[in-house]
Image 1: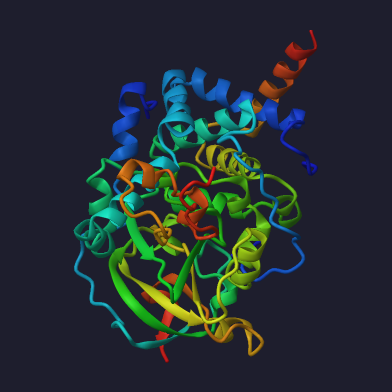
Image 2 (image 1 turned 90 degrees about the horizontal axis):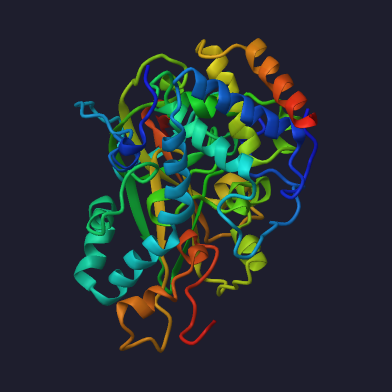
Amino acid sequence: MKALKAEDVSDALRHSRGARVDEDVVPKFTTGERVLTRNLHPVGHTRLPRYVRARHGTIRCDYGVFIFPDAHGMGEGKKPQHLYSVCFTAQELWGPGASAHDRIYLDLWDDYLDPA
Amino acid sequence: MSEHHDHDAPLPETVLRVKALESLLTEKGLVDPEALDKLIDTYENKVGPRNGARVVARAWVDDAYRQRLLADATAAIAEFGFMGRQSEHMVVVENTPEQHNMVVCTLCSCYPWAVLGLPPVWYKSAPYRARAVMDPRGVLGEFGVTLDDDVEIRVWDSTAEIRYLVLPRRPEGTDGMDEEALAGLVTRDSMIGVGLAKARGDG
Amino acid sequence: MNGAHDLGGMHGLGPIDREIDEPVFHAEWERRCFAITVAAGFLGQWNIDMSRYARERMHPAEYLNTSYYEHWLHGLQTLLVEKGLLTEEEIAARMLELAEEQET
C-alpha cells in the first residue's frame, strides 16, 4: 500500500475509471416502460431513497451496465446491472396537492425495479 | 458529540482529529504531503465553474457542438479537456421555454466536479437536499427565480454516478457576443438549475 | 439504510442558507480533511460506495447537526479503523499529544 505521489495526482483525477462495467448483461426494462420501484429497506448501503419506494415511474432511458452500489458498498462485488433514468410525476411522489406539471428523475438499477 | 457551529469557530476536537489523522497517515507513508497540497490546489484554484461556463458558451454559439453535448456530454465536455473524478458519466439537460431543469443529490452531495468544481455549502446542506425534489418552485423562489406556471420543472436526483449539468437558456440580446463574453454570463447557479444566466450588462 | 442522510421530502429544515461568493474551503481543517480523504481513497482499501456508507452510519442527530466535512471526517475515521489502517487508540493518543502541544 503506497501513498499517492504528487506527480500522479493529475492523472489519477483525470483518468478515474468511473462506474461503468464492460459486461454484457440483459436489461430487464426498455425505454418507455412503466415500472414500480421496490419497497426495499436494507440496513446496508442503498441509493434508493425512501421517497421513491413503491412508486410508479417510466423508464426515460437505459444508461447501460454499471456497478451496483448496494453490493459494492458492502464488499459484495460489483454485481453489474443496467442503470436507468426513471421519471416520476410530482403527484406520484408527493400526492394530489403537488404540481401537475413537474417531474423528478432518478437513476435506478434493475434490482430496484419491477414491471408495473 | 459535535455542536452546531459556524465556520469561523472550528471545534477544537474536529481540528485535532484532522491533524491527528493526517500526521498518523503521513508517518505510516499512507499519504504524501505534496500530494495532499496538489489535491487541494486542484480544487481550490484550478477546477471550477468557469469550466462549465465555457461548455455552455460553446453550445450557445455552435449548434453542432450543442447537439454533440446533448448526445454524449462526456465526450463533448472532454473536447475541452475537462474530465475525470465525479464527472466520468456526464449528461447535459437543456432548459427551454417549456422546461426548466434542476439538479440535486438528496442522499449526499454528488456534483460534477470537473465542470463545476466542488459544490457550495448550500447544495450539500439538508434544506436544499430535502426540498429540491419536493418543492422546486419554492426553492427557485428562494433563489429569486420565478417561472411561468406552465413551465415543467424537471428535478434530477443524482442517485448514481451519472452527473448532470444544466444548459441554461441563452439570455436575450446577446447576439454578436463572443464566446468568452458569453461564458461570463453563465453562473454556477444556472448550471445547477437554481438560477438563470445573467443578462448582458449585469454585474 | 434508512438514515438521516436520506433527506428527500423532509420538512422543517428551514431556509436554504446561502453565502454569496463563498470560498471553496472555509477553514484549513476542511482543506486537510478533503485532501486526506481523497488521498486515502487511492490506497485501494475501499471504494466510493463504501465511503458513502461509512458517512451514512453517523447517528442521525449528529449527522443533521454537523457540517459536510465533519461527515467526511467521521466516514474517513470509520473506514481507516474498519480496514485496519489505524486504531481508535492511536488516533486518540495522537489527539491528546497534539492538544498538549497546543497548550505549551
